[in-house]
Length: 216
Ligand code: AP5
Image (cartoon, rainbow, N blue to C red; front, side):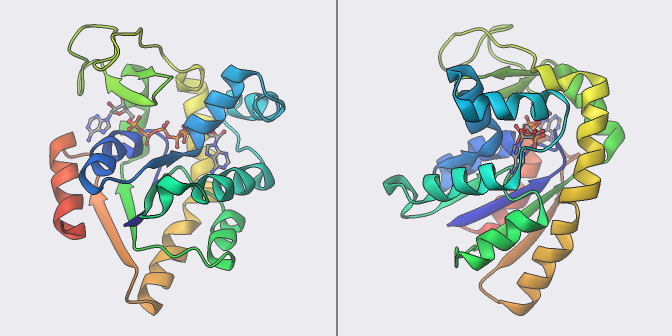
């Protein structure tokens, strides 16, 4: 199963990825998590990515495309993968198509901007794993601690309201066009399923809606 998750920042891609990767036994490839790990490790790529991420802007296509191609080539991706946060520009989507990387499903999680801004202020993240929680909608078992490791949860630097507004603007300008791009691909290719779900429903209902379309 090779899946692309599409959606605005905070639409719930990472949240649904946690369920889908377990259900279909595929790795999550989150470009955001990979970039945060590079920043933490202090690599050259991390240094380049940090300024763009802190400003709510995108990291350059060249860096991201190289990162994902290397990751997809690894052994654990042989039976599929879930792309979370990639592609998010037309050149990135073209790179996927031109590399002959086949996709089985594109899942669009639709959430209006007003709801996104509300959600981000309550998001808490376990940066090492990429697991995310929400203080009201998806609280951890112990306040401020990751369920699996017991380590501290933090608020991401780019979840401040002014940065979220910039991220939404970038989403509408550069990523939203991918909705039509993949709808057109699905219309031409019966092997690609385009699935759109209402991301404002409860987390468990969003999961059910996706699984009912994807099947077992
Ligand atoms: P990235 O980490 O990918 O961030 P994002 O796409 O902006 O997405 P988020 O992780 O913020 O949100 P999400 O959709 O995963 O939502 P979540 O499940 O956490 O990217 C960060 C940055 O890296 C980018 O800005 C860019 O600079 C760079 N970057 C990454 N990929 C790139 C690429 N391909 N090209 C260039 N640059 C790139 O949910 C959000 C909150 O809502 C949580 O608190 C959650 O608990 C809650 N929630 C989820 N679902 C629901 C629900 N149904 N009801 C109520 N609450 C919910």
